[in-house]
Length: 194
Image (cartoon, rainbow, N blue to C red; front, side, top):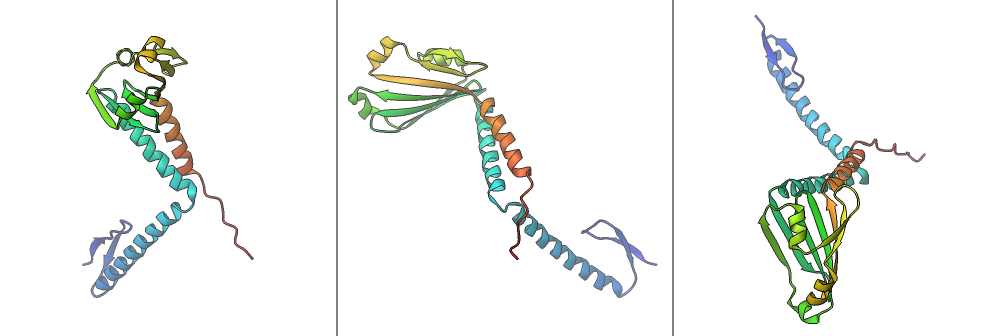
């Protein structure tokens, strides 16, 4: 009586009798190896060209920004570093928004004291963060804004600064859509020279 055997490659039930069983199993293993090789060739072919590689890069960027977006719901993070002889960059992730500030230091004593440092604090709403940073903001739409400290503080502190407030959704959603377009677009047919 023949016993059914399930093949791993395609899931069909096959019946075998006697010595043909070993030969058929050996053929099935060879076909599986060929299938694996063809899968690696398919992946190599899928990532041929710049569009799909750029699609993966934009997807990784979107995922990283989405992680920061979720993290900003429970933690206030900041990063500050010198970007020139008398300028400093300031990034703050708070309450679903990214705040990017550029400070131009006019007091050279302050310029020598600035360095690279990371800040972290408990969650605070965006309004409280802007008050803590002493920023007056002008809002341009849902979550977008530009801010600067009041003039008397700028004169006391010895630097002028401008801050841009960007909501995370305005970065994550376009990057995700761009990566989807790049990853799922059909590659152009290559023209073979005659």
